[in-house]
Length: 240
Image (cartoon, rainbow, N blue to C red; front, side, top):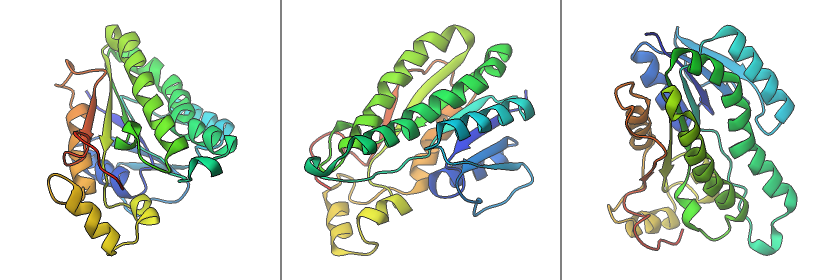
């Protein structure tokens, strides 16, 4: 069997690392992002799309379904938009709902006929430890928590078709999103790392390792699960 993985946010960071590793394993990879990938490979295909735009996402999904028989869907793209509760707007909540939940639904609906036709599929989300609660994360935490509920529902519906659905939920990981909130190399970054039980921040490789487990065709007996890749930060309270 040949495999084709759609990775949202596959241009850099976690998505890029996962995409490169899947290409090295013989997968075709379709990256969806607003900008061109910072990596290249003969098996990499790129579609430029703003996943905050539902209509544009539907167009991308239709394009993918026409050109590829998708076996793996990894919804990795995300944004934080931090604000104290007094400053959060309904538009913040609506925007991240589309990005984290709506885009995943649109893309799954586009890819699902091929998965059902094969009797095989792997669907994965990049969640977040913030689903457990972090200050200034009203819209982000709410929509990342929603991912867990949606994934569990899909897992039940799609299990009879050989499609698994799982969530990888990272804690603080050294990515551009993280450094948009906490300055790179700052005392605040060092202090946060010291409060994580394993004593360090996560890396993109830590997270892509978890995704590779769920991608594996042999791991078909694991579905509806959330794996926290957070250095132990989900075990107790940890203030960012």
